[in-house]
Image (cartoon, rainbow, N blue to C red; front, side, top):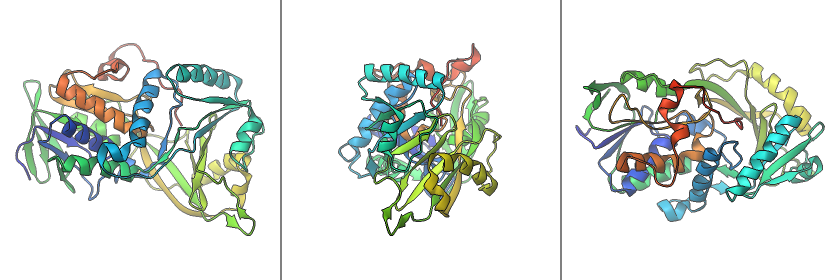
Length: 388
């Protein structure tokens, strides 16, 4: 293991890999990723549904999406590595009149930023996703450039491209402490030794708060368990009884979502009763709650068995927006945390922005003020509405 590095990145998920890639592009190659697991992307990155979308309620998040999805569309040209990326769209179903009105206002903002989003009647939504039941739906929104991407491919693409420029990765290496003296970081202590460094990037996902505590910081990120289920094959003698494409359908008020996954359906839903914690055991009784909603929106699920299920952790902040930037109290400590369920899809842009801040002191062409660490010390900031 190296004894010194210009930058040490804690966490080898999509965020850490993206920061390393963008730093290498800026000429910062004396960089190390420290990853606790044996593989990159083994934490929250590898346990998400892979969705990417432009349809957010805050302009800052839409701008992150525009840059990130654009980079995914050009991923081979940008990194030299291919990814699995299907742009079949996101379809939001709105049953509450107030929510439908808010989504229509969001669409106006999204269109102003150059994103093509349609407002649809319930029957138009049904035609996009055969088998969908739209009873009680007031309207829907749809963006054709939204879609599903491969988290593992994106993470490894960023990491391999950064390694080719000199970045090093230490797997199965856990961070045990951070040395801070006179208000600035000096080193990262790990199970395999210490690395002296003037710059630390906290990219530890749901463990961001623990890493912050090592530097004397209280980072307001809480881990919240989320479940994903995949059905057995739904191909029968009459053919495929699920949408032919991978359109992501989200019933906004209940947060139930689904998209085709191979010959089956991937689906999930948030649990309002879930409390913060690191337990990723699948709670099979929760499936009954999901089914009560799922069978109302996609009746064909009643005939499907479950082939796979897993749970992962959202890294949630009080306003459901991320923290991107430095900690003023601890010089050299940078954060890219708390994306509240939309981290993977924003990792290309977020990594570029943090690399700019590290190299130049500020992000190019982007206002990061909604994502500062210090926003939590004043009045409650306006949050992101479109969290599922």
